[in-house]
Image 1 (cartoon, protein in one colour):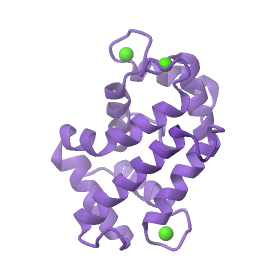
Image 2 (cartoon, protein in one colour):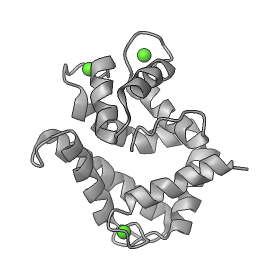
Image 3 (cartoon, protein in one colour):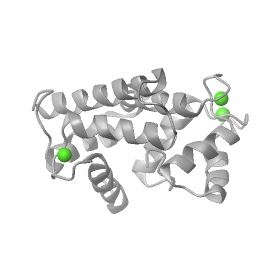
Length: 177
Ligand SMILES: [Ca+2]
Ligand SMILES: [Ca+2]
Ligand SMILES: [Ca+2]
């Protein structure tokens, strides 16, 4: 039911989020990932933006752990991670995905929303993709693809749709690295 690209992307996601590389996902991995992202945006570890992102990643881990039935202090194997995320991304539909991922996306928006309007303009997006390691030309092309309303701004909803599209293999820019 899911494509090979979609499968690969979940494997990449698992490996990226397993920050200590022990083959399982724990809360500490997700907190480290939040810290890494904050560092890539040159945000202080005690800044409110970093705290928001830490809370968002903590919430995401708690969701996955609860769904996998391992508890908040437990860990998820790759198989468990796949089972939970495949259900979320490919079966439950957009509303569930958005509910789970919105805090994380908002957290990353907070990292680069320099003019504090809650949306991401072209300059802010270049900083975002720079932080996750995507080059400038690619960033420009991706911006137009993600800005489905065509207003020159990326909203939370447009960015959520883009992360979902990435996992469906319909967009090639890894917004979460
Ligand atoms: Ca780990
Ligand atoms: Ca902005
Ligand atoms: Ca837009």
